[in-house]
Amino acid sequence: MGVPVITAGDEVIVGFDRPRLERLASRFAPPPPPVDPATRPRVGLRVKDVPGGAEVGGVRPGSPAEQAGVRVGDVVIEMNGKPIGSAAELETALASLTPEGTVAVQVRRNGKQVRLRMPLGE
Image 1 (cartoon, rainbow, N blue to C red):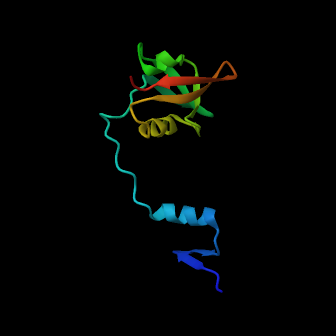
Image 2 (tube, rainbow, N blue to C red):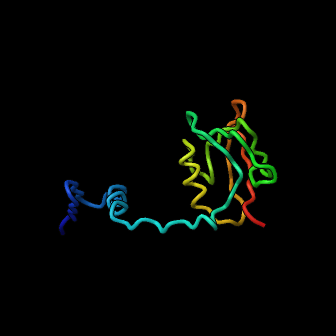
């Protein structure tokens, strides 16, 4: 019985090293289809980068963010279990959502972590 050896460029994988095989496969996977901006959920937040998250600078009245209780000054640190380290990561997380149901949001408020549920649709 032999041991599989996989080469891709300058990377060599010997055996069944699943994490390395998955990283290699992801390099060759097709990019996800573009998200139609018209169907992306709008949550009503204005944010900026701060160390360890995306700080809320504005919440649109009547928006899902306001309904969830997000406040100006909150720092979004997690969305649906995915860590958020910047405004760009928050945008990426939002782009992967469908405009229905709810999303779990964790914010840092006055030094404490607060969990919120944000409605995305009726």
